[in-house]
Structure formats: C-alpha cells, structure tokens
Amino acid sequence: MSVALSECGHYVAHTEGTSISIHSISPEIQLRRYNCTKDISKHLSVSIVNEIVFKIEDVYWESVDASNKSTKLAVSVSSKTFSAALIYDITRTGDPIIIESESPISRVSWILGAPDEGSAYKNCTQLVLFDKYGLLARVYSLDCTRVLFSVPKPIVQGILERPKHPEFWSLLSTSYYDKNSTSRSILIDLQSDSRPYLLHFNNVFSRSALLASLEMDHQPSPSAQITWDPEGRWLLFFDSGIPYLVTPLNESHLASPTLHSTHTKGIGWTFSWVNIENSLFIAAIPSRSNKKLDLRVHGVSHLSHCYPAAIDLEQADTIWVYEDFDGEGSYRRTDALPEAEFEWRTIRDNGTHLVLATGSVIVIVRRTSHGPLVKFDPEAYISSSRFKDIHFYKSSIVLLFQDHVAVYEDGRLSILAKSRYSLVSMKVTESSEARTISLVEQTPQGQTWRQIGQEPQQDDSMSILNKISYGEDSSKVVNLVKEVERNEWGRAARRRLTEDTDTFKLNFKRRRPPGLPELH
Image (cartoon, rainbow, N blue to C red; front, side, top):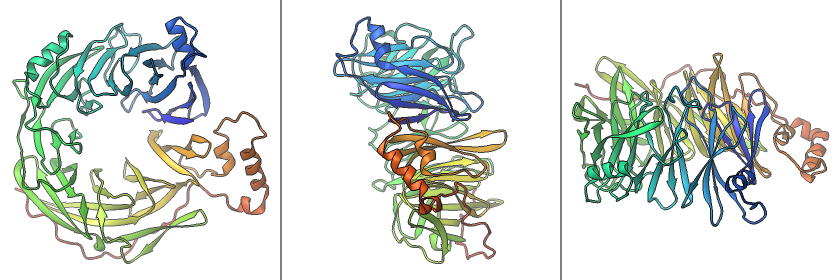
C-alpha cells in the first residue's frame, strides 16, 4: 500500500494492488475508487484480468496554483508487454483517458496553465511523459487524441516551471531526429552537435509551442541543477562549482549566459536564491565544512563580484539536541555542538532566514541588513534525527524528520507530531488563516496518512490502524494493539501531537561573527 498527497493538500490517493481510492483529507471521506486493471481491459476490449499482471508504478497529481484544488491525477501502469498512463478526473464519473506508451514510463509531469474556454477540464490540460530509457519526452493534451510533439533525449526527467509565469515551461535536451514537425523545428535549433540545449515553450491553453532555445557550453554532470529565481526573472545553471547565470529571454527571444565562474571547479557546492532589500543574490555553501562555514554571495546586479562571509556555528544563539527515550522524544538545550564535521545537502531562504541542512543537522541563519551592510548570524542549531523536508509558512519553519515534525518560530522550537514508525512526506496548506499539515507515514502494514491542525490530537496506535483497511477484524495486529490499549502501560504511552518542548525565548545574545563587506 502506498499514499500520494495531492498538490493542493486536500486529497490523498491510496493505492493497493491495481486499485486506487481517492479520499478527502478533511472531512475524511472516500470520494472515488478505481480499478486500473479493469479500466485497461475495457480500453483494449479484451479479457486480460487473469492473463496479464499489472503494476502501478507511481501516482502523479496535477500541478495547481495556491487558489485551486486538484482535480486530476495520472497513474503510470506497466506489465511485461504493456505500459500506459491513466488519467482520472475525480470531479466526474466515467472512464479514464488512457495514453499507451511503447516503453515504460519513468515520470509524468503536468504542465501548469489555464485551459481553453472550450476545454472540458479544469486546471492542467497538458502533460509530459518521460520514457524509462531517456530517449523521448512526449507532450500530450487532454483535448487532443494524439501526441502533440516529442522532445528528443531529455537530460532531466522533468520540466522546469517558471514561477509566476504558468504560460512558460522548459526542458533540457540533446539533439536527436524525429519525424514530428515540431521536433524538426527543435532540431533546427539543436543543429547537429551533441551539446545540450535548454528549450523554452509557450503554453497557450491546451497547446504548447517552441519559443526559444539556449545552447549550453558544456555537458552537465549528474549533480547539475537548473532553477528559476522565485520571481521567474533569472535562470541559474549550477554545476559542480561552475555556476553561471542566464537571462531567460531578451528582445530577440534568445537567451545568453551572463556570468561564468571556474575558480571553484572541483569543489562541491549547493546554493539558494536570496532576496535582500529587493535585490537578488545567489548564496552558495561548500558540501563539506567544519564548525566554521564559508558562505559566498553573488549579486545579480554585480555579477563579477563575490562577497564571502564566515559563519561560526558555535556562535548560534541556541543549540538544541533531540533525545529519544522509550519513544518519547524531546529537545534539550546545550552549550556545545555535538557534531564537528558537516556534509551540507540543502540551503533554503524564506526572506528573513537561511536554513542549512545536513542529513540530521539544521542551522537557521538570520539575515540582517543595515544599509549596504548585510550580516549572516547563526540563530539556531538543531541536532536531530534523520532530516526529510522543510516547508515555510508565514514566519514559521516547519521541519520534517524521520520520526517527528518540528516547527521553529520566534526563537522557539516545538514538536508538532511524532511517529513510532517512519514519516515519508508532508504537505503544508493554509485554510481560513490556519496551518494544516498532512503527513504520509510508513507503517509495517503499508503507508497511511494523517492531518495535523492547530489543536492537539491523539496519536495512539488505533488512530493509525483506523487509516488502514484490513481483510478481517480478527487480524493479529489489530488484536495485539487492542490488548496493548487495555493495559495500563499502553494507556500511559499515549502522546499528544502538539508538545512544546521550548516555550520561552533565550534572553541573552552570543557574540556574532562579522558579516559581508559593503555591497556596491
């Protein structure tokens, strides 16, 4: 059993075998139930239910903006001789759209954009199917019965969405010949060499057309990253310490590199876009460091300038260490860092703080600016269990770990939820000015889900088991849990989902390292 949360955070798809049930998270009700094997059998007009064994590879909810709810999901299904994507619309009854594929499907990407007024669908009407062997990315429209066009040899298994510009999307590809007319126009831009190209497409209602292409000057490594800034104005290609910045489009509808640096070649780095006083910067940190972390900041307005800064992690205002005794985890304060060496994986910016993460350490860095002077001060150091994900909600920083969810806000760290098994993913949504967190949890019986609101909730074994369908009430697991619940120690072991482990702010300030020099 597996669970997939919708992009809007209001629905969940629960798969078991080749059956899929769609549930509303709040209120918790089942909306739809589908059987992929029966739908494929009906589509092929043959009785293959007992002859071919199908497997659901993955579930892909459509992309939506913050104001809309998800209405569709794509399900990739495969057998030894058949592969397809089944498109289900949860707002209506009837048969799904089935897109057959000559090769197994590795990924499905929805193209965000408003549908045509004459379209029968809401939200997304286009999607891209990537084949397992990396040969083709096929673009389909739900309002058309055939493939729109194919993009040859995509390097990245997924599309690049441009923030705040839903009519614009991109793919990274290499040259390849295809008979499709749109692919031939792509081939003209790609010419005959094997260097990668960044292809920009214009999404108009239920169709997409090639808009521009950018020739890259080297082959990207497996660690290469391409991302838009939060406003969708600049595009950054970052590859193993060789970053360069590109502008997406100019008056000639072409793109060209504007910053190219090689002085850090061979050093692994990770990066984040940073907005300081309405000016755009790129902050980068090395993949490995000791307690003194070197931070480099590139200003977009001064591309050739690099502003170094040193962050002394030992100078953090507060140091927290997570401890777990008999399943009762909590944070305690300490004066010394428990770690000396770090392998950084993530750096994120929420407008006021940088959040740095290793596999189990979170560092929250405060950004302050006084005129042209910008300082980076370590505000909180969190040594915890295995780190999974991070979400920003207003002034809160929500952290997902393997066995709990914590929230950092106004200098306080609180445990919001715990798991006796393993948390897989979370989705943070806003409803009526309230924060709601949906969690996917891996249990011995499969994946299940639960939701955390602002009010404390019970987190006992029966609440978890209620999410799982059993074939009979006499299940050994159910009986065992019921016996535990009847025992005194079982009742005492119940935990609250909301447990503040730090409800006061530290009143003293530590010495902070110097910040950046003046930005010109």
